[in-house]
Image 1 (tube, one colour):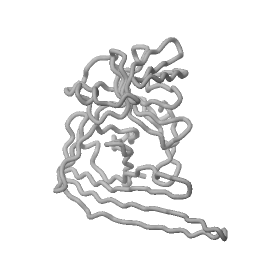
Image 2 (image 1 turned 45 degrees about the horizontal axis):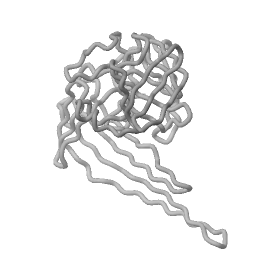
Image 3 (image 1 turned 120 degrees about the vertical axis):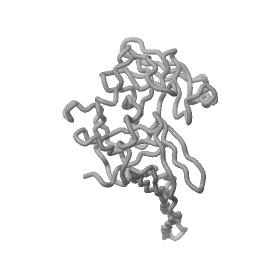
Length: 261
């Protein structure tokens, strides 16, 4: 697909700047409720008149409000599951799972905690909008698509004038090894009775870690001396000419390829 056909032009507030990210039409599956993955996790599709499979959500009112939604053919919906086995899905909290239905241009989600959410539903081949943008995502085709140097950034947590942000660098090498490190920065303000204020900034850097990485269908596994991290990995932007990944999502963090311009 040409870049001009890209869908859901979202502005994602990450890495300290406002990035205009084009979400690709090619991310959507042409299947509708058909199991195309060995692990049973379905790629996102809107072909059957309702969403089925895995979608990446960004709120229309808060660009830092990003989640992973999984819609089953049977009408169940789950938000941010850590795994997609039957046991893991059954363990998702009542405020993050429920049932969903699409009637005309309206989507209704009845959460297991008793609340109901209804919104305007509009779909095209790349995903749908409903109080935000839902991009349908698919598993990576091969490990080469993830090779590169990436910076991950969790959106800063802010309370009043105090904030905490965490960054991490992840280098995925073609020989199956990786290195990563982390950096945290905080800012706090205190105010006194005489109207004076005192600002405190602090930063810390973690030790670099090295290990091996493996892509197996949907799942990316990182193993080093600290242990193993495993989770679903999918990309949300890429170079259509070279097929290099620009941004991918893994364990609740979006990673930007810093080697691409």
